[in-house]
Amino acid sequence: MAKYMQQLEGNFDLLLKVLEDAALSSASASFEEGSDWQEGDTRVAVRVYERYSMIGSNRVSLSITLIGKGRGLYVTAITSGGSQAVFFKVNRFGEEAYLDIIESAVEAARRP
Image (cartoon, rainbow, N blue to C red; front, side):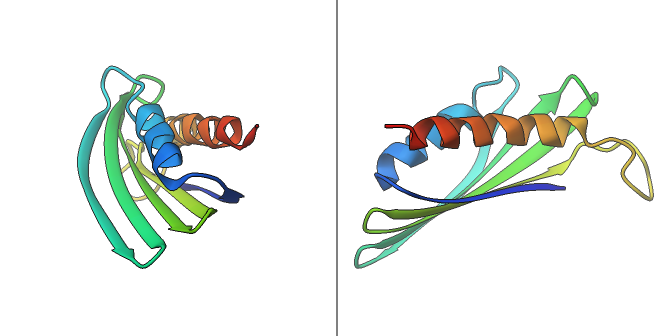
């Protein structure tokens, strides 16, 4: 399991679109399920994706949670799967590669 967390300022809908596009940038990626919640100016979006990892020769899942209050945003992305072992993780290459795509997308969105 690999995790990325970031707090930033911006537009909730725009960052959510950036995250969705990044998560689905692989031909084997798919949207699995999602949930949205809002109360006042506080919003939460949860998304789950999955893709095949050529590096690890397995499937990897990605969960993204985006929280927004006004222009304040907080994003957490967690990957899972990606190992071929029975009792412990042998490789995490696919997880880390999927997470790198999300991290790059958030960092690019932070730039003016």
